[in-house]
Image 1: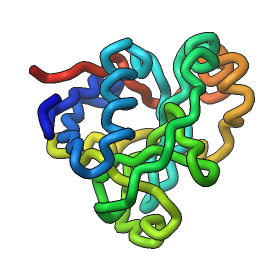
Image 2: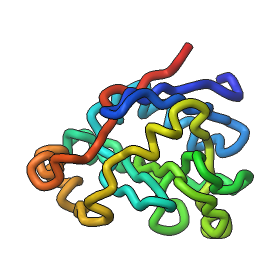
Image 3: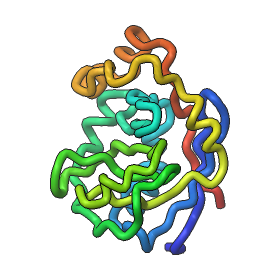
Length: 170
């Protein structure tokens, strides 16, 4: 596998290009690539948008797909800082990464010491990321998203932006 590769996120607001760096967090990169190649993120919503902090996503449109991909991933060592535009797996403690990701909207260096290991960064389209709908804040309930997927989000939070398609750029 190449040390770096690019992923395009076609979103409801426009395209974003990520530069993925295997040397930064190899386990995270391997999982991310596998999820992108399987179409996991296609249709996923940006369900947590906190201006100046993060845009979070990574629960599949179909709750069965989320459930089938819930295996925990071991932590990578944090080698890069959570600066603006960097992509990182969300975690609920040691070795609990699964599919959820966030893009740092600010310089979140305080996350570095908490085990959040960036593995990619936005190289095109950060202005798109800044436009994602943030009016719902942290209201969407992750448990409901896991159980009902986009059916819940579309009914309760219709203005959320999302990923139309995620693909590797060869």
